[in-house]
Each structure stands twice: as structure tokens, then as C-alpha cells.
Length: 195
Image (cartoon, rainbow, N blue to C red; front, side, top):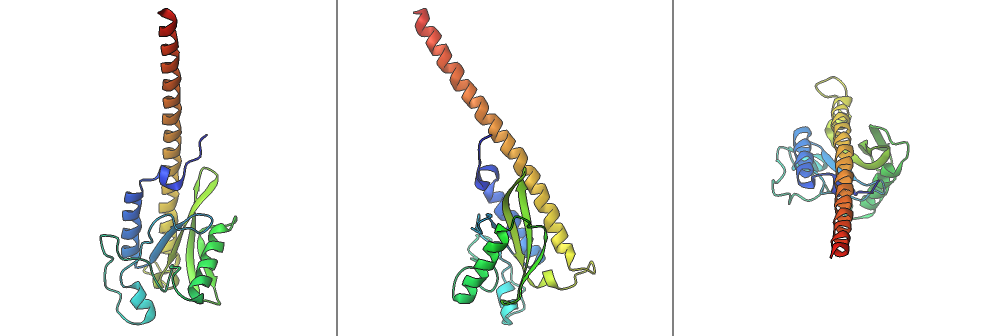
């Protein structure tokens, strides 16, 4: 079976809209990353989350619709000083874990709690959804901090099923195209012999 990249098997524009909508709905920052920790798309960043976390605002702003909201400076970004670099190292090591399971992961030295949900396409760890925000560590309306994590896990599991179906369809199309090319060459060869 052919190997496809994450962007080969998903409609990245629709996925970006989903990530942005989830980020705004849950008031959290979301990032989809490869097992090496590389961003696979723009982070979904709730507009007021940076200000909320730094104590500068009420967090009621919404993300910019054109995607120009950038990345969360106090959350999942990689810009800036040594703290940001250590944050990126923590997030990359989290994505690289072979035993990664949906859960909350703490980096006590940074005071950082991140929800991580692996995305498996078939049996391959293809990506991880990382989430950060105050709602992940506070008790929510369900009475537990796990409601958001449970919902993100469910959505990512359905996304993985869709990814697996897309991978199979792409493989089938590729196989049919190869067969069509072979049949075309055989037809051309037979027509040349008939002349």
C-alpha cells in the first residue's frame, strides 16, 4: 500500500475550520502535530486565551476568521525565549511517545498541562492533537475535567476512521489509474502489431 502524508488523506481546509471551531467552542488552544512534534497545520487558538492566561483580559474575544490569529504565545507556540524552547521540547517529546494515550500530561517545571490525543491511521501513529487552556484543568459542567478530553478523543477517533477510509480510497484510485495506464500501453502495442 502506498504511503500518504497527513495532508494527502485529509481536506486540510475543512480540518482547519474544525480545529478553529473547537478551539473557540472550548476556549482552548489546539495543535495537530506529527509524531516528531512538527505542526501539520495552523494552531486553532482561541482569541482571548493568551490574555486570559497572562491575566490581561477577560478572554471573550473570538478567533479571527481569516486564520491570521497566529499562535498562542503562552501555550503551544515555539516563538520566543528559553521557556518557549523548553515548551516545544516537551510538546515534541510528548508527540513522539509510542505509548501516548488520550490524557492530561504535566510539565511541572513549566507549569504546563497539555491534553494529548493520538491519531492513528490504521495501526500507525500519524499525528497527535494537543490542547491547552484553563478549561482542561478546571472542573467543567460535567463535574469532571475529562469531558473536553473525552469529546476531543471521540472526534479524533472518528477523524482517524475517516483518514483510514480516505487512505484506502486514494490507494484504490491509484491502483485503478495504474491498471488503466497498463491497459492503454497494451492497447497501443496491439494496435502497432495490427498495422
